[in-house]
Length: 305
Length: 305
Image (cartoon, rainbow over all chains, first blue to last red; front, side, top):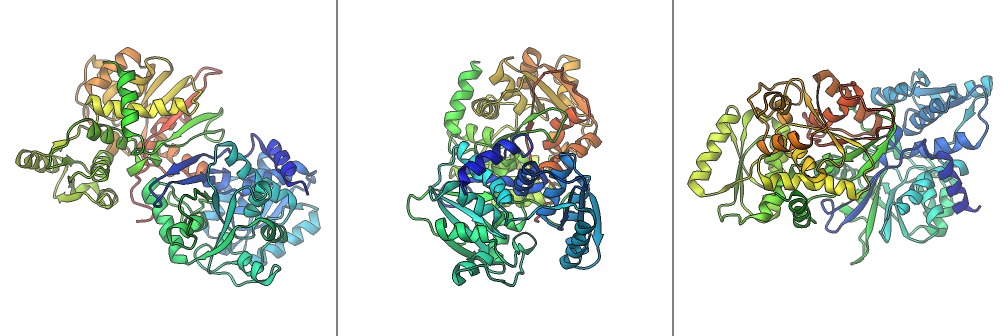
């Protein structure tokens, strides 16, 4: 696949729909300057809106609209993108998603059904709805349109003057890092950062193929994919610079530092990449310039809730 | 005074000390695009660090260091700038400042004394300390060095590509808007936005001179100056485009919108300028491009406190 072309096409497609998110360079978070991309300021609070818009603008969306089972960032992004583009959207949310995420999806104007129980129950309801109505599902991370959409972030960052030799990126299912690797093609070093408690990419790289992992911990509601996507795994085998793990307390520490130093309030997943620097899970060489992708801000409980 | 020169000198002085804060353009907060300057990401969470660094880098600081009476953004900025520059800093904080602001000042490493009672009691303690030790006070808004420091914000924003015809700025004592007017010299329209409950500049413009006002309301701990600075008043008479007031509920609404639309968590003062647009207190002409300065993020209670 010509990823550079796919990502540039996606960027043209989502222009005016996705937010161009700001960047900054700070001396306050580590012993040397760190470039940040503030992607938590994206619509619905995470990079997921990029992939959702790209998918819905690439393919004909059926009259029945779009369906998703998610109480997370993906569900909110699909709901937002679909309603903004004038499509019907039906989101099935597990009750356990909690009031902050449920309110986030509600605000998009999508039809929302809270399903008693866990994610599996919501997924079952979504599949039944898909079969019944013909509504379209948008894959959260392992589809070329999703990956190309997420890849627009790194393209945008380079256009904004990214200088870093090395970019640290948190990984859940792998859509964001896959898009980044696909855009960069080895031009900069990419470091995958996962919580010790949710590390599907790390496990896949050790096993030589995506494998199931147990997920838990502070960032599990965003990074807790049971299996990394195959697109991510393939691109990681080709281009990934390093794969590191961070303990949950390092994630919480980085989350506190972002708030205390710069009034950036993020969810644990959004602080995971920074945690690798601050906790020493990734140690750059002298002179190696580093950048950290801040990917999500949907904290719970909602501070203004 | 050659303000352009003063502000450019201040910018050179504070370079590497104050944070260059990011900008973004959003369609999600008003019916047309709005440019934002995210100055709440500044060190200690408000623009005040600019004036504090400029003052401390312009004048010889006595051996006894710096003293301030403040439980607010100014006190935190002075404490931060002084300790970063290796000066002693003694901050007297009124008990009523609350735990979030007290913790913010504590984290700077400054010596902190919590004074029982109100602001006046802290001020009395600070004056006694100044008389006893010879420590230096930094004026919060009505001194040329402070105004020139705050003026670096608008200079920076223009260098970042500001396109707006009109910039909305919240006003308390008037240091920030004074610096902005001093830099722009009428080149763009500046709109002063004050809470109905704390409107020292509006009252001064009506009276023809700074006068005492009553202050209260949601933004009073940041915008509640009893009298606007004379530098601000003079520059406003020369260059201000409009002075508008917003009710407290419009401020709270704008604060919620910034969080819900873009995960920007700000204090009420930081949302006050946006409130004028959203509530219609300032109505731009068709085609008039607008920008909003987001000036502070020190919300209480602290969401991670």
